Image (cartoon, rainbow over all chains, first blue to last red; front, side, top):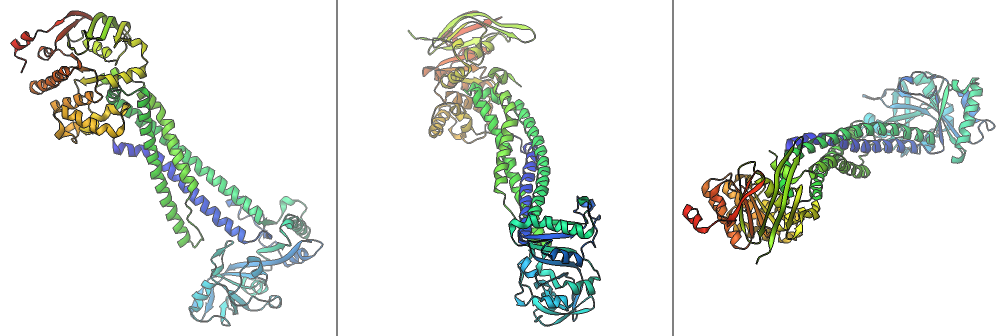
Length: 397
Length: 239
Protein backbone atom coordinates (compact mmCIF):
# COMPACT_ATOMS: atom_id res chain seq x y z
CA UNK A 1 0.00 0.00 0.00
CA UNK A 2 1.11 3.50 -0.75
CA UNK A 3 3.21 4.61 2.25
CA UNK A 4 2.56 8.36 2.08
CA UNK A 5 -1.16 7.77 1.73
CA UNK A 6 -1.21 5.37 4.66
CA UNK A 7 0.70 7.82 6.81
CA UNK A 8 -1.65 10.70 6.04
CA UNK A 9 -4.61 8.50 6.79
CA UNK A 10 -3.04 7.53 10.07
CA UNK A 11 -2.69 11.12 11.28
CA UNK A 12 -6.15 11.11 12.83
CA UNK A 13 -5.34 8.02 14.86
CA UNK A 14 -1.88 9.34 15.74
CA UNK A 15 -3.30 12.65 16.98
CA UNK A 16 -6.05 10.93 18.92
CA UNK A 17 -3.71 8.52 20.68
CA UNK A 18 -1.15 11.28 21.29
CA UNK A 19 -3.91 13.31 22.93
CA UNK A 20 -4.91 10.38 25.14
CA UNK A 21 -1.33 9.82 26.31
CA UNK A 22 -0.76 13.54 26.82
CA UNK A 23 -3.97 14.00 28.77
CA UNK A 24 -3.38 11.03 30.98
CA UNK A 25 0.30 11.71 31.58
CA UNK A 26 -0.04 15.43 32.26
CA UNK A 27 -3.35 15.02 34.05
CA UNK A 28 -1.78 12.47 36.35
CA UNK A 29 1.25 14.73 36.85
CA UNK A 30 -0.90 17.74 37.68
CA UNK A 31 -3.06 15.75 40.02
CA UNK A 32 -0.05 14.25 41.79
CA UNK A 33 1.46 17.69 42.20
CA UNK A 34 -1.69 19.33 43.55
CA UNK A 35 -2.54 16.38 45.75
CA UNK A 36 0.93 16.28 47.27
CA UNK A 37 0.68 19.98 47.98
CA UNK A 38 -2.73 19.71 49.55
CA UNK A 39 -1.73 16.68 51.56
CA UNK A 40 1.37 18.42 52.84
CA UNK A 41 -1.02 20.81 54.61
CA UNK A 42 -2.17 17.97 56.86
CA UNK A 43 -5.68 16.60 57.20
CA UNK A 44 -6.41 18.56 60.40
CA UNK A 45 -5.63 21.97 58.92
CA UNK A 46 -8.47 24.33 58.07
CA UNK A 47 -7.78 27.54 56.15
CA UNK A 48 -10.00 30.60 56.34
CA UNK A 49 -9.65 33.10 53.52
CA UNK A 50 -11.32 36.48 53.15
CA UNK A 51 -13.96 37.07 50.50
CA UNK A 52 -16.21 34.62 48.74
CA UNK A 53 -15.03 31.33 47.40
CA UNK A 54 -14.27 32.13 43.77
CA UNK A 55 -16.79 30.48 41.46
CA UNK A 56 -14.54 30.82 38.46
CA UNK A 57 -11.67 32.79 37.00
CA UNK A 58 -13.82 35.88 36.40
CA UNK A 59 -15.00 35.78 39.99
CA UNK A 60 -11.57 36.38 41.49
CA UNK A 61 -12.08 40.11 41.97
CA UNK A 62 -15.23 39.82 44.05
CA UNK A 63 -13.32 39.40 47.28
CA UNK A 64 -13.42 41.38 50.45
CA UNK A 65 -9.77 41.23 51.24
CA UNK A 66 -9.93 42.97 54.61
CA UNK A 67 -12.63 40.91 56.29
CA UNK A 68 -10.41 38.89 58.65
CA UNK A 69 -9.20 40.87 61.65
CA UNK A 70 -7.56 40.40 65.05
CA UNK A 71 -11.02 40.30 66.66
CA UNK A 72 -11.85 37.14 64.67
CA UNK A 73 -8.80 35.38 66.06
CA UNK A 74 -9.85 36.25 69.59
CA UNK A 75 -13.38 34.95 69.04
CA UNK A 76 -12.19 31.75 67.33
CA UNK A 77 -9.79 31.07 70.18
CA UNK A 78 -12.66 30.97 72.72
CA UNK A 79 -13.36 27.40 73.82
CA UNK A 80 -17.15 27.82 73.78
CA UNK A 81 -17.05 29.11 70.20
CA UNK A 82 -14.73 26.52 68.61
CA UNK A 83 -14.22 23.76 71.19
CA UNK A 84 -12.01 21.51 69.03
CA UNK A 85 -9.54 24.18 67.99
CA UNK A 86 -5.98 23.11 68.79
CA UNK A 87 -3.93 25.85 67.13
CA UNK A 88 -4.67 29.07 65.31
CA UNK A 89 -2.31 31.18 63.25
CA UNK A 90 -2.94 34.29 61.15
CA UNK A 91 -1.01 34.81 57.92
CA UNK A 92 -0.24 37.97 55.98
CA UNK A 93 1.83 37.75 52.84
CA UNK A 94 3.22 39.61 49.89
CA UNK A 95 6.37 40.13 47.88
CA UNK A 96 9.00 42.58 49.11
CA UNK A 97 12.60 43.27 48.27
CA UNK A 98 15.12 42.15 50.88
CA UNK A 99 18.55 43.77 50.86
CA UNK A 100 21.86 42.66 52.37
CA UNK A 101 24.82 44.93 51.65
CA UNK A 102 24.86 45.15 47.83
CA UNK A 103 22.63 42.16 47.24
CA UNK A 104 18.89 42.44 46.73
CA UNK A 105 16.33 39.69 46.29
CA UNK A 106 12.52 39.62 46.25
CA UNK A 107 11.19 36.68 48.27
CA UNK A 108 7.64 36.03 49.44
CA UNK A 109 7.30 37.61 52.88
CA UNK A 110 5.06 35.67 55.23
CA UNK A 111 3.88 37.23 58.49
CA UNK A 112 3.05 34.32 60.79
CA UNK A 113 3.50 33.03 64.34
CA UNK A 114 5.79 30.38 65.80
CA UNK A 115 3.17 27.72 64.97
CA UNK A 116 4.24 27.97 61.33
CA UNK A 117 6.84 25.23 61.78
CA UNK A 118 4.35 22.86 63.37
CA UNK A 119 1.53 23.41 60.88
CA UNK A 120 3.69 23.14 57.77
CA UNK A 121 6.07 20.62 59.27
CA UNK A 122 9.17 22.54 58.32
CA UNK A 123 11.88 23.43 60.82
CA UNK A 124 14.96 25.62 60.50
CA UNK A 125 18.14 23.56 60.23
CA UNK A 126 20.12 26.54 61.54
CA UNK A 127 18.87 28.80 64.30
CA UNK A 128 15.32 28.82 65.61
CA UNK A 129 11.74 29.97 65.06
CA UNK A 130 10.47 33.12 66.79
CA UNK A 131 8.74 32.98 70.18
CA UNK A 132 5.23 34.19 71.11
CA UNK A 133 6.85 37.08 72.97
CA UNK A 134 8.67 38.18 69.83
CA UNK A 135 5.37 38.03 67.90
CA UNK A 136 3.58 40.07 70.54
CA UNK A 137 6.48 42.49 70.76
CA UNK A 138 6.67 43.32 67.03
CA UNK A 139 10.18 41.84 66.97
CA UNK A 140 12.41 42.47 63.95
CA UNK A 141 13.43 38.85 63.42
CA UNK A 142 13.30 36.71 60.27
CA UNK A 143 13.81 33.14 59.18
CA UNK A 144 14.74 32.74 55.54
CA UNK A 145 14.54 29.98 52.95
CA UNK A 146 17.62 28.38 51.43
CA UNK A 147 17.39 30.22 48.10
CA UNK A 148 16.95 33.59 49.81
CA UNK A 149 20.03 32.83 51.90
CA UNK A 150 22.12 31.98 48.82
CA UNK A 151 20.89 35.01 46.88
CA UNK A 152 21.67 37.46 49.65
CA UNK A 153 24.65 35.90 51.42
CA UNK A 154 26.20 33.49 48.93
CA UNK A 155 28.32 31.09 50.93
CA UNK A 156 28.74 33.47 53.86
CA UNK A 157 27.18 32.81 57.23
CA UNK A 158 23.76 34.47 57.43
CA UNK A 159 22.73 33.64 60.98
CA UNK A 160 22.75 36.76 63.17
CA UNK A 161 23.22 39.09 60.16
CA UNK A 162 20.81 41.93 59.48
CA UNK A 163 18.84 42.39 56.26
CA UNK A 164 16.57 45.25 55.26
CA UNK A 165 13.01 44.69 54.12
CA UNK A 166 11.16 47.82 53.02
CA UNK A 167 13.65 49.93 54.94
CA UNK A 168 13.26 48.03 58.20
CA UNK A 169 16.13 46.03 59.58
CA UNK A 170 15.58 42.37 60.46
CA UNK A 171 17.92 39.97 62.26
CA UNK A 172 18.24 36.50 60.74
CA UNK A 173 17.48 34.03 63.54
CA UNK A 174 16.93 30.90 61.45
CA UNK A 175 17.41 29.34 58.01
CA UNK A 176 15.15 26.68 56.50
CA UNK A 177 16.70 23.66 54.76
CA UNK A 178 16.23 23.23 51.00
CA UNK A 179 12.65 21.95 50.69
CA UNK A 180 11.19 23.03 47.37
CA UNK A 181 7.52 23.46 46.59
CA UNK A 182 5.15 22.51 49.40
CA UNK A 183 1.50 23.44 49.64
CA UNK A 184 1.43 26.21 46.98
CA UNK A 185 4.55 27.78 48.45
CA UNK A 186 8.16 27.45 47.46
CA UNK A 187 9.70 27.20 50.92
CA UNK A 188 13.14 27.97 49.56
CA UNK A 189 11.88 31.31 48.39
CA UNK A 190 10.31 32.76 51.57
CA UNK A 191 11.21 34.91 54.51
CA UNK A 192 8.99 34.57 57.56
CA UNK A 193 8.62 37.32 60.15
CA UNK A 194 6.14 37.88 63.02
CA UNK A 195 2.72 38.80 61.60
CA UNK A 196 2.54 41.79 63.88
CA UNK A 197 5.72 43.24 62.45
CA UNK A 198 4.60 42.40 58.91
CA UNK A 199 1.23 44.16 59.35
CA UNK A 200 2.72 47.19 61.03
CA UNK A 201 5.95 47.85 59.12
CA UNK A 202 5.90 45.94 55.84
CA UNK A 203 2.36 45.82 54.47
CA UNK A 204 0.72 48.54 56.57
CA UNK A 205 -2.55 46.64 57.02
CA UNK A 206 -4.79 45.70 59.95
CA UNK A 207 -6.30 42.53 58.47
CA UNK A 208 -5.05 39.04 57.66
CA UNK A 209 -4.77 37.25 54.31
CA UNK A 210 -5.44 33.88 55.90
CA UNK A 211 -6.28 32.34 59.22
CA UNK A 212 -5.01 28.80 59.59
CA UNK A 213 -6.62 26.61 62.22
CA UNK A 214 -5.70 23.11 63.25
CA UNK A 215 -8.44 20.92 64.73
CA UNK A 216 -7.59 18.64 67.65
CA UNK A 217 -8.35 15.54 65.58
CA UNK A 218 -9.27 14.57 62.01
CA UNK A 219 -12.75 13.46 63.09
CA UNK A 220 -13.52 16.91 64.44
CA UNK A 221 -12.55 18.80 61.27
CA UNK A 222 -16.09 19.04 59.87
CA UNK A 223 -17.52 20.14 63.21
CA UNK A 224 -14.79 22.68 63.60
CA UNK A 225 -15.47 24.07 60.13
CA UNK A 226 -19.10 24.63 61.13
CA UNK A 227 -18.07 26.22 64.44
CA UNK A 228 -15.70 28.55 62.59
CA UNK A 229 -18.43 29.61 60.15
CA UNK A 230 -20.91 30.31 62.96
CA UNK A 231 -18.37 32.25 65.00
CA UNK A 232 -17.27 34.39 62.07
CA UNK A 233 -20.85 35.07 60.93
CA UNK A 234 -21.74 36.21 64.45
CA UNK A 235 -18.66 38.31 64.57
CA UNK A 236 -19.34 39.87 61.14
CA UNK A 237 -23.11 40.24 61.73
CA UNK A 238 -23.98 37.97 58.81
CA UNK A 239 -27.31 36.12 58.89
CA UNK A 240 -27.48 34.92 55.27
CA UNK A 241 -24.71 32.33 54.63
CA UNK A 242 -24.70 33.28 50.94
CA UNK A 243 -23.40 36.70 51.96
CA UNK A 244 -20.35 35.28 53.78
CA UNK A 245 -17.31 37.53 53.49
CA UNK A 246 -14.95 34.61 54.15
CA UNK A 247 -14.61 31.03 53.09
CA UNK A 248 -13.31 27.97 54.82
CA UNK A 249 -11.22 25.30 53.15
CA UNK A 250 -10.16 21.90 54.36
CA UNK A 251 -7.88 19.36 52.80
CA UNK A 252 -10.82 17.06 52.07
CA UNK A 253 -12.70 19.85 50.29
CA UNK A 254 -9.65 20.91 48.36
CA UNK A 255 -9.09 17.33 47.27
CA UNK A 256 -12.71 17.10 46.16
CA UNK A 257 -12.39 20.30 44.18
CA UNK A 258 -9.15 19.21 42.52
CA UNK A 259 -10.78 15.90 41.64
CA UNK A 260 -13.73 17.73 40.07
CA UNK A 261 -11.51 20.13 38.11
CA UNK A 262 -9.15 17.46 36.80
CA UNK A 263 -12.20 15.32 36.03
CA UNK A 264 -13.72 18.02 33.82
CA UNK A 265 -10.34 18.71 32.24
CA UNK A 266 -9.81 15.03 31.47
CA UNK A 267 -13.33 14.62 30.11
CA UNK A 268 -12.92 17.62 27.84
CA UNK A 269 -9.67 16.40 26.37
CA UNK A 270 -10.93 12.83 26.18
CA UNK A 271 -13.82 14.13 24.06
CA UNK A 272 -11.34 15.79 21.71
CA UNK A 273 -9.36 12.56 21.54
CA UNK A 274 -12.55 10.61 20.84
CA UNK A 275 -13.56 12.91 17.98
CA UNK A 276 -10.09 12.70 16.51
CA UNK A 277 -10.13 8.92 16.78
CA UNK A 278 -13.56 8.72 15.17
CA UNK A 279 -12.45 10.89 12.26
CA UNK A 280 -9.27 8.83 12.07
CA UNK A 281 -11.35 5.66 11.97
CA UNK A 282 -13.42 6.97 9.07
CA UNK A 283 -10.14 7.79 7.31
CA UNK A 284 -9.02 4.21 7.81
CA UNK A 285 -12.30 2.89 6.46
CA UNK A 286 -11.97 5.16 3.45
CA UNK A 287 -8.43 4.08 2.61
CA UNK A 288 -9.29 0.43 3.15
CA UNK A 289 -12.22 0.74 0.73
CA UNK A 290 -9.92 2.34 -1.84
CA UNK A 291 -7.41 -0.42 -1.23
CA UNK A 292 -10.05 -3.13 -1.65
CA UNK A 293 -11.10 -1.65 -4.98
CA UNK A 294 -7.54 -1.23 -6.16
CA UNK A 295 -6.69 -4.78 -5.22
CA UNK A 296 -9.78 -6.40 -6.70
CA UNK A 297 -7.62 -8.48 -9.05
CA UNK A 298 -5.39 -9.59 -6.19
CA UNK A 299 -8.46 -10.67 -4.23
CA UNK A 300 -9.71 -12.61 -7.24
CA UNK A 301 -6.33 -14.26 -7.69
CA UNK A 302 -6.09 -15.24 -4.03
CA UNK A 303 -9.57 -16.72 -4.21
CA UNK A 304 -8.71 -18.63 -7.38
CA UNK A 305 -5.67 -20.03 -5.61
CA UNK A 306 -7.80 -21.32 -2.77
CA UNK A 307 -8.40 -18.42 -0.37
CA UNK A 308 -11.80 -18.64 1.28
CA UNK A 309 -13.94 -15.59 2.05
CA UNK A 310 -12.77 -15.91 5.62
CA UNK A 311 -9.10 -15.84 4.56
CA UNK A 312 -9.66 -12.61 2.63
CA UNK A 313 -11.68 -11.07 5.48
CA UNK A 314 -8.92 -11.90 7.94
CA UNK A 315 -6.24 -10.50 5.63
CA UNK A 316 -7.92 -7.12 5.16
CA UNK A 317 -8.98 -6.87 8.78
CA UNK A 318 -5.42 -7.66 9.80
CA UNK A 319 -4.12 -4.94 7.47
CA UNK A 320 -6.55 -2.40 8.93
CA UNK A 321 -5.57 -3.36 12.47
CA UNK A 322 -1.86 -3.23 11.60
CA UNK A 323 -2.40 0.25 10.18
CA UNK A 324 -4.27 1.59 13.19
CA UNK A 325 -1.99 -0.12 15.67
CA UNK A 326 1.00 1.43 13.91
CA UNK A 327 -0.79 4.77 14.30
CA UNK A 328 -1.39 3.92 17.94
CA UNK A 329 2.28 3.11 18.56
CA UNK A 330 3.39 6.34 16.85
CA UNK A 331 0.81 8.23 18.92
CA UNK A 332 2.02 6.63 22.15
CA UNK A 333 5.66 7.47 21.41
CA UNK A 334 4.74 11.02 20.39
CA UNK A 335 2.51 11.45 23.43
CA UNK A 336 5.20 10.23 25.81
CA UNK A 337 7.81 12.48 24.20
CA UNK A 338 5.56 15.53 24.41
CA UNK A 339 4.57 14.74 28.00
CA UNK A 340 8.21 14.35 28.90
CA UNK A 341 9.16 17.66 27.31
CA UNK A 342 6.25 19.50 28.92
CA UNK A 343 6.98 17.92 32.32
CA UNK A 344 10.61 18.92 31.95
CA UNK A 345 9.68 22.51 31.10
CA UNK A 346 7.21 22.75 33.98
CA UNK A 347 9.65 21.24 36.42
CA UNK A 348 12.69 23.15 35.23
CA UNK A 349 11.56 26.58 34.18
CA UNK A 350 8.49 27.02 36.36
CA UNK A 351 10.16 25.41 39.38
CA UNK A 352 7.17 23.18 40.02
CA UNK A 353 7.77 19.85 41.72
CA UNK A 354 6.34 18.25 38.60
CA UNK A 355 7.06 14.60 37.96
CA UNK A 356 6.93 12.99 34.51
CA UNK A 357 4.43 10.17 34.75
CA UNK A 358 4.51 7.21 32.33
CA UNK A 359 0.81 6.46 32.14
CA UNK A 360 0.85 2.66 31.83
CA UNK A 361 -2.94 2.58 31.77
CA UNK A 362 -3.00 5.11 28.94
CA UNK A 363 -0.50 3.08 26.92
CA UNK A 364 -2.64 -0.03 27.30
CA UNK A 365 -5.74 2.03 26.53
CA UNK A 366 -4.06 3.60 23.49
CA UNK A 367 -3.07 0.23 22.07
CA UNK A 368 -6.49 -1.20 22.82
CA UNK A 369 -8.35 1.73 21.28
CA UNK A 370 -6.24 1.83 18.12
CA UNK A 371 -6.66 -1.93 17.62
CA UNK A 372 -10.39 -1.62 18.23
CA UNK A 373 -10.66 1.20 15.69
CA UNK A 374 -8.92 -1.01 13.14
CA UNK A 375 -11.44 -3.77 13.83
CA UNK A 376 -14.51 -1.53 13.83
CA UNK A 377 -13.65 0.55 10.79
CA UNK A 378 -11.87 -2.30 8.97
CA UNK A 379 -14.71 -4.81 9.13
CA UNK A 380 -16.86 -3.19 6.44
CA UNK A 381 -14.10 -2.93 3.79
CA UNK A 382 -12.85 -6.42 4.72
CA UNK A 383 -16.34 -7.92 4.31
CA UNK A 384 -16.66 -6.17 0.99
CA UNK A 385 -13.36 -7.73 -0.09
CA UNK A 386 -14.32 -11.18 1.13
CA UNK A 387 -17.60 -11.15 -0.80
CA UNK A 388 -16.08 -10.46 -4.19
CA UNK A 389 -16.65 -13.38 -6.52
CA UNK A 390 -13.31 -14.69 -7.78
CA UNK A 391 -14.30 -14.42 -11.40
CA UNK A 392 -15.61 -10.88 -11.25
CA UNK A 393 -12.50 -9.90 -9.35
CA UNK A 394 -10.20 -11.51 -11.93
CA UNK A 395 -12.00 -9.80 -14.79
CA UNK A 396 -11.66 -6.40 -13.12
CA UNK A 397 -9.36 -4.03 -15.02
CA UNK B 1 -10.17 -47.32 -18.68
CA UNK B 2 -9.42 -44.07 -16.94
CA UNK B 3 -11.97 -42.39 -14.69
CA UNK B 4 -13.72 -39.21 -15.87
CA UNK B 5 -12.40 -36.31 -13.83
CA UNK B 6 -14.92 -33.92 -15.37
CA UNK B 7 -18.43 -34.64 -16.52
CA UNK B 8 -20.91 -31.98 -17.62
CA UNK B 9 -24.55 -32.61 -18.41
CA UNK B 10 -26.69 -29.93 -20.00
CA UNK B 11 -24.47 -27.26 -18.46
CA UNK B 12 -26.10 -23.83 -18.58
CA UNK B 13 -24.99 -20.40 -17.46
CA UNK B 14 -27.16 -17.33 -17.55
CA UNK B 15 -26.05 -13.97 -16.24
CA UNK B 16 -28.71 -11.85 -14.66
CA UNK B 17 -27.73 -8.22 -14.43
CA UNK B 18 -30.04 -5.62 -15.90
CA UNK B 19 -30.57 -7.94 -18.84
CA UNK B 20 -30.43 -11.69 -19.07
CA UNK B 21 -27.44 -13.03 -21.01
CA UNK B 22 -27.16 -16.71 -21.72
CA UNK B 23 -23.50 -17.69 -22.06
CA UNK B 24 -23.86 -21.46 -22.07
CA UNK B 25 -26.99 -23.25 -23.28
CA UNK B 26 -26.59 -26.92 -22.42
CA UNK B 27 -23.18 -28.51 -22.89
CA UNK B 28 -22.42 -32.19 -22.62
CA UNK B 29 -18.98 -33.82 -22.47
CA UNK B 30 -16.68 -35.61 -20.13
CA UNK B 31 -12.93 -35.39 -19.70
CA UNK B 32 -10.83 -38.28 -18.45
CA UNK B 33 -7.87 -38.16 -16.16
CA UNK B 34 -4.69 -37.33 -18.04
CA UNK B 35 -6.32 -35.73 -21.10
CA UNK B 36 -5.02 -32.54 -22.69
CA UNK B 37 -8.06 -30.68 -23.99
CA UNK B 38 -8.15 -27.43 -25.93
CA UNK B 39 -11.33 -25.44 -25.77
CA UNK B 40 -11.55 -23.06 -28.68
CA UNK B 41 -14.16 -20.76 -30.12
CA UNK B 42 -14.67 -17.18 -31.21
CA UNK B 43 -14.78 -14.46 -28.59
CA UNK B 44 -18.15 -14.36 -26.88
CA UNK B 45 -18.67 -18.05 -27.55
CA UNK B 46 -18.70 -18.85 -23.85
CA UNK B 47 -15.39 -20.70 -23.71
CA UNK B 48 -14.00 -18.59 -20.86
CA UNK B 49 -17.23 -18.92 -18.93
CA UNK B 50 -16.99 -22.66 -19.38
CA UNK B 51 -13.43 -22.72 -18.11
CA UNK B 52 -14.39 -20.66 -15.05
CA UNK B 53 -17.16 -23.04 -14.16
CA UNK B 54 -14.98 -26.11 -14.75
CA UNK B 55 -12.34 -24.44 -12.54
CA UNK B 56 -14.85 -23.85 -9.72
CA UNK B 57 -14.45 -20.09 -10.09
CA UNK B 58 -18.06 -19.52 -11.04
CA UNK B 59 -21.36 -21.26 -10.37
CA UNK B 60 -23.54 -22.82 -13.03
CA UNK B 61 -27.20 -21.92 -13.38
CA UNK B 62 -28.52 -25.09 -14.98
CA UNK B 63 -27.63 -28.71 -15.66
CA UNK B 64 -24.95 -30.52 -13.73
CA UNK B 65 -21.19 -30.53 -13.37
CA UNK B 66 -19.52 -33.50 -11.70
CA UNK B 67 -15.91 -33.06 -10.62
CA UNK B 68 -14.36 -36.40 -9.62
CA UNK B 69 -17.86 -37.79 -9.52
CA UNK B 70 -19.28 -35.19 -7.11
CA UNK B 71 -21.76 -32.55 -8.22
CA UNK B 72 -20.58 -28.94 -7.92
CA UNK B 73 -23.92 -28.03 -6.40
CA UNK B 74 -23.03 -30.16 -3.38
CA UNK B 75 -20.01 -27.96 -2.57
CA UNK B 76 -20.17 -24.88 -0.36
CA UNK B 77 -18.14 -21.81 -1.37
CA UNK B 78 -15.54 -22.75 1.25
CA UNK B 79 -15.27 -26.28 -0.12
CA UNK B 80 -14.92 -24.95 -3.67
CA UNK B 81 -12.01 -22.83 -2.45
CA UNK B 82 -10.41 -25.88 -0.86
CA UNK B 83 -10.78 -27.95 -4.03
CA UNK B 84 -9.28 -25.08 -6.08
CA UNK B 85 -6.39 -24.98 -3.67
CA UNK B 86 -5.66 -28.71 -3.48
CA UNK B 87 -6.65 -30.20 -6.83
CA UNK B 88 -6.66 -27.40 -9.39
CA UNK B 89 -3.98 -25.17 -10.82
CA UNK B 90 -4.67 -21.97 -12.76
CA UNK B 91 -2.67 -20.14 -15.40
CA UNK B 92 -4.12 -16.83 -16.64
CA UNK B 93 -3.50 -14.75 -19.71
CA UNK B 94 -2.56 -11.73 -17.55
CA UNK B 95 -0.23 -13.84 -15.35
CA UNK B 96 -1.75 -12.32 -12.19
CA UNK B 97 1.43 -12.22 -10.15
CA UNK B 98 1.71 -9.93 -7.12
CA UNK B 99 3.93 -7.17 -8.55
CA UNK B 100 6.15 -6.01 -5.64
CA UNK B 101 6.74 -9.55 -4.53
CA UNK B 102 9.55 -12.01 -5.30
CA UNK B 103 9.18 -15.04 -7.50
CA UNK B 104 9.51 -17.27 -4.45
CA UNK B 105 6.74 -15.47 -2.53
CA UNK B 106 4.44 -15.56 -5.56
CA UNK B 107 4.91 -19.28 -5.98
CA UNK B 108 4.31 -19.86 -2.26
CA UNK B 109 0.98 -17.98 -2.29
CA UNK B 110 -1.33 -21.03 -2.65
CA UNK B 111 0.44 -22.72 0.28
CA UNK B 112 -0.85 -19.90 2.49
CA UNK B 113 -4.33 -21.35 2.06
CA UNK B 114 -3.30 -25.01 2.31
CA UNK B 115 -2.70 -27.34 5.21
CA UNK B 116 0.99 -27.70 4.28
CA UNK B 117 3.37 -26.97 7.15
CA UNK B 118 5.08 -23.62 6.82
CA UNK B 119 8.51 -25.17 7.38
CA UNK B 120 8.14 -27.05 4.10
CA UNK B 121 6.98 -24.10 1.98
CA UNK B 122 10.37 -22.95 0.72
CA UNK B 123 11.48 -26.42 -0.25
CA UNK B 124 8.30 -27.14 -2.19
CA UNK B 125 8.31 -23.74 -3.87
CA UNK B 126 11.98 -24.02 -4.91
CA UNK B 127 11.24 -27.41 -6.47
CA UNK B 128 8.30 -25.96 -8.43
CA UNK B 129 10.41 -23.00 -9.61
CA UNK B 130 13.14 -25.42 -10.68
CA UNK B 131 10.65 -27.45 -12.71
CA UNK B 132 9.89 -24.39 -14.88
CA UNK B 133 13.59 -23.56 -15.20
CA UNK B 134 13.65 -20.32 -13.18
CA UNK B 135 15.95 -21.31 -10.31
CA UNK B 136 18.17 -18.29 -11.06
CA UNK B 137 15.23 -15.89 -10.65
CA UNK B 138 13.99 -17.00 -7.23
CA UNK B 139 14.60 -13.67 -5.46
CA UNK B 140 13.67 -11.40 -8.38
CA UNK B 141 10.69 -9.12 -8.08
CA UNK B 142 8.02 -10.53 -10.35
CA UNK B 143 7.41 -7.16 -12.05
CA UNK B 144 10.98 -7.21 -13.39
CA UNK B 145 10.60 -10.51 -15.26
CA UNK B 146 9.87 -10.89 -18.96
CA UNK B 147 6.40 -12.03 -20.02
CA UNK B 148 7.52 -15.59 -20.67
CA UNK B 149 9.23 -15.77 -17.30
CA UNK B 150 6.14 -14.38 -15.58
CA UNK B 151 3.97 -17.06 -17.13
CA UNK B 152 6.45 -19.74 -16.07
CA UNK B 153 6.28 -18.38 -12.51
CA UNK B 154 2.49 -18.62 -12.77
CA UNK B 155 2.83 -22.24 -13.87
CA UNK B 156 5.14 -22.97 -10.94
CA UNK B 157 2.53 -21.41 -8.67
CA UNK B 158 -0.17 -23.57 -10.28
CA UNK B 159 1.94 -26.67 -9.64
CA UNK B 160 2.79 -26.00 -6.03
CA UNK B 161 0.02 -28.08 -4.47
CA UNK B 162 0.55 -30.89 -6.97
CA UNK B 163 -2.88 -30.51 -8.62
CA UNK B 164 -4.43 -33.25 -10.74
CA UNK B 165 -5.81 -30.72 -13.23
CA UNK B 166 -4.49 -27.45 -14.64
CA UNK B 167 -6.70 -24.80 -16.22
CA UNK B 168 -4.96 -22.45 -18.60
CA UNK B 169 -6.92 -19.44 -19.86
CA UNK B 170 -5.18 -18.06 -22.95
CA UNK B 171 -1.76 -18.61 -21.34
CA UNK B 172 0.14 -17.46 -24.42
CA UNK B 173 -2.15 -14.54 -25.26
CA UNK B 174 0.29 -11.93 -23.95
CA UNK B 175 3.48 -13.67 -25.11
CA UNK B 176 5.60 -13.68 -28.26
CA UNK B 177 5.62 -16.96 -30.13
CA UNK B 178 9.00 -18.07 -28.73
CA UNK B 179 8.10 -17.73 -25.05
CA UNK B 180 4.59 -18.93 -25.88
CA UNK B 181 6.15 -22.07 -27.29
CA UNK B 182 8.19 -22.56 -24.10
CA UNK B 183 5.05 -22.23 -21.99
CA UNK B 184 3.21 -24.73 -24.15
CA UNK B 185 6.10 -27.18 -23.92
CA UNK B 186 5.96 -27.01 -20.15
CA UNK B 187 2.21 -27.67 -20.23
CA UNK B 188 2.80 -30.59 -22.58
CA UNK B 189 5.43 -32.00 -20.23
CA UNK B 190 3.04 -31.68 -17.30
CA UNK B 191 0.43 -33.59 -19.31
CA UNK B 192 2.97 -36.32 -20.05
CA UNK B 193 3.55 -36.59 -16.29
CA UNK B 194 -0.11 -37.50 -16.01
CA UNK B 195 -1.86 -34.22 -15.21
CA UNK B 196 -5.09 -33.26 -16.93
CA UNK B 197 -4.74 -29.98 -18.82
CA UNK B 198 -7.62 -27.84 -19.98
CA UNK B 199 -6.56 -25.02 -22.23
CA UNK B 200 -8.72 -22.19 -23.51
CA UNK B 201 -7.25 -20.49 -26.54
CA UNK B 202 -8.16 -18.84 -29.78
CA UNK B 203 -4.78 -19.51 -31.36
CA UNK B 204 -4.80 -22.73 -33.38
CA UNK B 205 -1.06 -23.36 -32.96
CA UNK B 206 -1.36 -23.57 -29.18
CA UNK B 207 -4.61 -25.54 -29.40
CA UNK B 208 -2.78 -28.19 -31.31
CA UNK B 209 -0.53 -29.11 -28.42
CA UNK B 210 -3.61 -30.87 -27.03
CA UNK B 211 -4.92 -34.34 -27.78
CA UNK B 212 -8.51 -33.30 -27.95
CA UNK B 213 -10.37 -30.28 -29.25
CA UNK B 214 -13.68 -28.91 -28.02
CA UNK B 215 -15.09 -26.10 -30.16
CA UNK B 216 -17.67 -23.92 -28.49
CA UNK B 217 -19.94 -21.62 -30.44
CA UNK B 218 -22.90 -19.62 -29.18
CA UNK B 219 -22.89 -21.47 -25.89
CA UNK B 220 -22.99 -24.93 -27.43
CA UNK B 221 -20.40 -27.59 -28.27
CA UNK B 222 -19.88 -27.37 -32.00
CA UNK B 223 -17.12 -29.96 -32.33
CA UNK B 224 -15.57 -32.47 -29.95
CA UNK B 225 -12.89 -34.82 -31.20
CA UNK B 226 -9.24 -35.90 -31.09
CA UNK B 227 -6.37 -33.95 -32.63
CA UNK B 228 -4.35 -36.28 -34.78
CA UNK B 229 -0.60 -36.26 -34.15
CA UNK B 230 0.27 -36.35 -37.85
CA UNK B 231 -1.83 -33.31 -38.44
CA UNK B 232 0.14 -31.55 -35.76
CA UNK B 233 3.44 -32.48 -37.33
CA UNK B 234 2.26 -31.35 -40.73
CA UNK B 235 1.65 -27.93 -39.37
CA UNK B 236 5.14 -27.97 -37.94
CA UNK B 237 4.19 -27.02 -34.45
CA UNK B 238 5.90 -29.96 -32.82
CA UNK B 239 9.56 -29.39 -32.04
